[in-house]
Image (cartoon, rainbow, N blue to C red):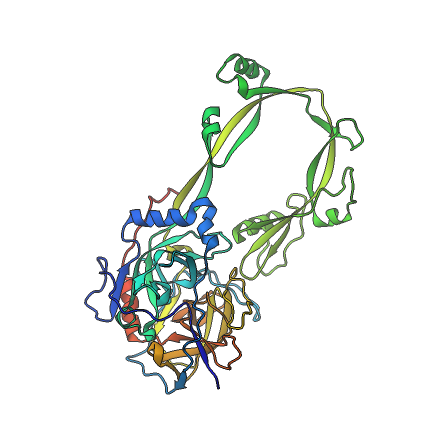
Length: 523
């Protein structure tokens, strides 16, 4: 049987020595190696600015990290696994509220997300990863080759961040800048893919990215090159007169000869049209053309977060919960709400025409000028916001695991079934026999049938996953993709076997503090 292999995310690591570890690392353990990703708060702030400026433009530009190569063709599956000690585990933290779920649905954990970084080629990439339990609730688990540039002499990648729940430029729980990467010494120094895993400490998350409005003078408004807005505010006749007399403010004031009054129709001389939001049923029943109650353009679809969607649903039915169907639109909340399994949501707004005739009352207005300032805030520790999966080592194989990640790249045959926008999952028993790939020094990988593509690199393999609590135990990460039947499509993947040495690397990372990039906002 012809077999083709893809290192999920890249070629072999070149031999090299990691940078010296930061204070607090377990340097005495020969299995543990570590390197700085952003050793100072200033460096972390620079990384954050790179990814967040221009409305998270860099995040949107990144693409899946993979290496489309078929050089390695020989893999062997034989023998079993030899644990180097007793089985062990560390429980998850921050389990979500238990909910009643249907067996055919899979609840995605908040802990998973995308790892973003810049390769030494200057391009922007992503892998998959997850928040994992640690002493300071600041740890991410991913693949080792999602931390080190596999084509750049074993150097750590640049501008490494983790974004849980990432969706099309949205960062619902903030961005977490990587501080320190922990790997096995054999991976960082001997190119041993049996140790292709990494645990990365991250600074407190930063979120908000608020376009906070700031009122400015007309001169400041004209000079500002960013987002800005001018708003008319109705004032009294007395303020209008005083404002017009002051040369500094005279241009800010103006009058309107008449205001809109009662409903008229499109045939009334000078009639003006406005939009009125209605429910989908009213919109569908409305006529097309010009007139009161006629359709006003096409429906408008607004992408929102799950939290925003839930708040809107609660306006329709304060008693609503996940066990009930979505409530029908009401006069106070006419938009149609849609939420998918991943928590991605939209509001669809429907409008009809309302025609008004000009009024005769004179109104007085002052124009206020605003600029929008980019503002961020500390949103706290990763584990406090999204929880952290547990960790397990020296476990027996042949158990069921569930994996979550973001596939995007093409299959070798050129087909591209995944968008990389929303996470996908696989479920099944791990292979009983060890997967061996001599050219990658792989002797004890565990395998799982799963037809994903590049971008799924670093995706966690969760043992004993609770669909209700959305928590399990990280017992592997996606390292290598395989085409085992020779049809030019990946159909299997493998992970390093997590043993006692893996636990040593994890334990070293799990006890290192990170801290904050910016002062935490008062709540």
